[in-house]
Amino acid sequence: MTWSLFANNLPYLLVGAFPQGPLGGAALTLVLAVCSALASAVLGLAGGIALAMAGRIARVPLLLVIGFFRAIPVLMLIFWTYFLLPMVFHVDVPGLATVVCALSLIGGAYLAHSVHAGIRAVGDGQWQAGLSLGLTRMQALRYVLLPQAMRIMAPSFVNQWVSLVKDTSLAYIVGVGELSFVATQVSNRLMVYPAQIFLFVGFMYLVLCTALDRIATYALTRRKRIVQPLTPATTQALSGD
Amino acid sequence: MQAWLAPKYLTWLRQGFGVTVGLALTVALAATVAGLVLAIARHARYGWLRRATAAYVLVFRNTPLLVQLFFWYFGAATLMPDALMQWLNTPHGVQLGAYALRWPSFEFVAGWVGLTCYTAAFIAEEFQAGLRGVPAGQHAAAAALGLTPLQAFRYVVLPQAVRISLPPLFGQYMNLVKNSSLTMAIGLAELSYASRQVETETFKTFEAFGVATVLYIAAVALIEAVSHTLAHARERSFARR
Image (cartoon, rainbow over all chains, first blue to last red):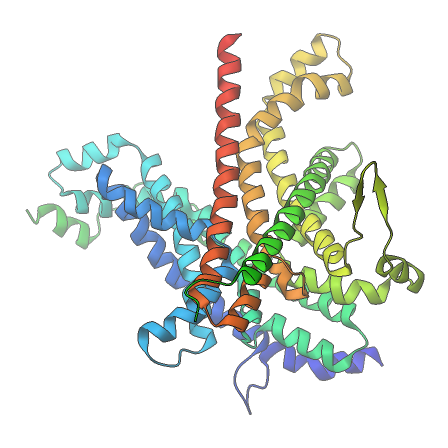
């Protein structure tokens, strides 16, 4: 009997009311996670590069902003974006967008430090080597530092993405119908098996996070050839000036 | 119309902050002990114990805290025997000298259990990294000096491991303060809950969320300061030797 209840509710947990209504459930969790993963990676790269390139004085406001996002709970930031975004843009911003915005800001702030640390870990020698070859600072960063730093920062990116998948559950608070929200709906409707439902939903998250962890780690840290032939873009950049 | 929040609402926020601090402190204490036990169990002689702790850490790290809290709050209540639930829900006075401790609500108990289990998994990883950071030569040296395995662990390995894992441990305490905001989803009246309540009653969103944000930042900054002071005090004490 339990199983038939589960089987009946499984599609709702997976995709929400999808064909008839809006996308929800685990599928929406995935969409949320992918959107904020991409945005946070871009923000984190930009922030980390800015930290690495900024002078002593320009770094202070940057560090303060990043520190702010790292110090407040995700939930608090979701409240802020939920309240501020519509005020700033004067349009009705869906809960989905506010959550993606909050998650990517927090993820970006965490990643900025990892990117900065990764660039620093490559070492001053590489900077100097790049500059003495006649590259500009931007070129040295792009063609010498970042490719090496990428390998160092890969684990932090994977960690951040995994915690991002978990944090998408906070969209529950502003009523976005992702997996946790749908789970409470099902639980409230059935009234009888809350423990089993939340165990099952937890298991879904577990599979999602573990799979992401394994796949991303494999994809990002797979042994590449150490000496790569110069790509046309690099050759062009090197002979460009 | 008043420009600032009325005293009544400030009291709400103060009480909310009190709950956040109380929750974070008690969880930090329990999770540190549990994390240490888990980390030691990861090095146990019995394979099943090692595998069980590894599974625990994997499961609790890779599922969202929100789902875990829902499980403890909605789910665990149905799994527990009725007598235990009744015992939990009826107040018990705990008299400690002149102080009378109030019996916590079930929300607090569920939140406490959820946060402790979650944080313990992360702290176990930090301790484990610390234990792994102690060179194998230290074990061998302690054994060569005639210490029993227990003595070697207590007097040689553990002090070094704790020193390595102290900074990330404080990072986990900061995460704990931030994660405690999620307990508002199960109705525990902590800081985020209070700020949201103040906001819905007064419509002074900036003030309500602003106070909560500042308090969170203050708490995190305080932990950072303690961590910094501890690290420096230790350096000084080593310099004296």
